[in-house]
Length: 352
Image 1 (cartoon, helix red, strand yellow):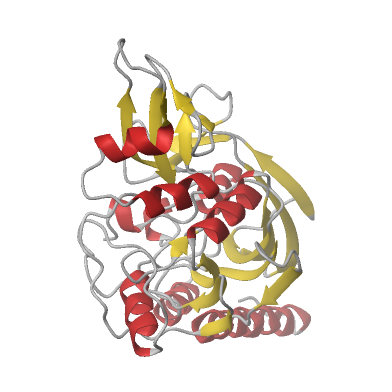
Image 2 (spheres, rainbow, N blue to C red; image 1 turned 45 degrees about the vertical axis):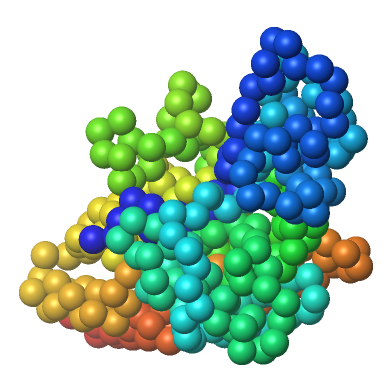
């Protein structure tokens, strides 16, 4: 079973790494000096970089390093990645780097690779692999030799992931995600025949009140955060449908939760109930067919196909696209064959 912390599909929120409230008797003091007094073993240069990246907040708003802290001010430092639970140890991990320059990288992530160390997966993650890559390629260590995550995808979701290589790039990329100016397309195979050729799924997403391992849609917005997913049918297989999803927001498990809410869980998505036969016949041959499909793609059928964003330094618009991984291709070939088989039998007057 995947661990709760290792099933983060997407989450473009900022994580708080430090917070302090100024005393009632606090005299006016530059925020960089204020933080130097309150955070042990931190350099002035690191604080300055955080301020330039927009990662120092006072009363929830970004400030420059010369901001004067006043009594009762709430001062915090935030980043797009959660605080590390462990030191990132350089480890050799297979990385499919499709683009890299001095500021950003784009990686085509394979299934089974956890992005960030967490409970149950402290080693062998993407960040461990980046630390090793930076070290071996002679690049300057970046905040303990790893890049800055601008977003994340789930352990068993494949596809494109953009990574910043410095705080400024990370902050600018994070803002693009927050402003919904990053173009992201996913390919998903779902259970059932989706009624509409295209549509939009809206509904706040938050952790289930019954099972903290999964996310639930709260259509009335009483819990969770706003989430919007646009979808378009690419191919119909009768009992399953291939769809293309475009994210307007980026919440944890957004596509998986939204499609289940629509009544069409991802094919073989164990966490959201897609690893059971939800549509189809009761024939033994069909059951065996589905079992064989599950063996081909032993994970949720979701792939981050493309990503487009504005380069945080040059301002150039970049776009990257990736092919479906082999397991996804094979299961689609299986469904293509099944559809042809059914059509042949129907035309022949037989039943399948």
